[in-house]
Length: 198
Image 1 (cartoon, rainbow, N blue to C red):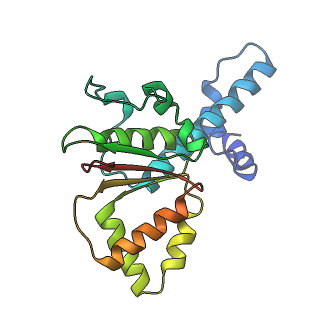
Image 2: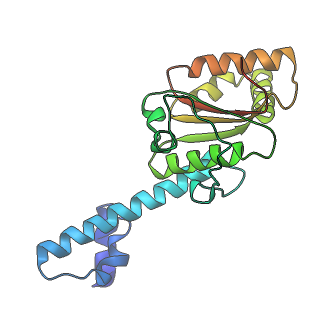
């Protein structure tokens, strides 16, 4: 019978039901079915978040839970910590710029926001800017720039870490500017930098 249930679940593309149905507490058949289906959805969302986090290519496992919100952090007058953490800026296709000296937690905060976005089902990509420029230059040389753009179409949030830390060629700067321009009002971008923006 268990094998039959597994086969039926496979046919119905229910990835987790066969593994969890025996652990579902219930008093009525409706309650059992409801809780079972809720658990299937919960486990699917968890698996999706794990896939999205892997695809994002974060450099570490830092999250908002272990980020230290210090008094040195300054927000623009129209924005609060809660606004930022709500990720509404992604829905609105707005951008976030995190500026400060090295070691102030910019990358940690950007990564934390990116991880939370993945957990909520958003497609995210994390790049150190110097590595992105290398990837763009290589794509240009190999006639793969349109393929790179196509891969970025479904992305909701792009994190560009360490903008301005390393100089790059004129061609690299132009490619980076071009790609950021294409993101404008299409997706959100988080930029971390130690350079003051005027």
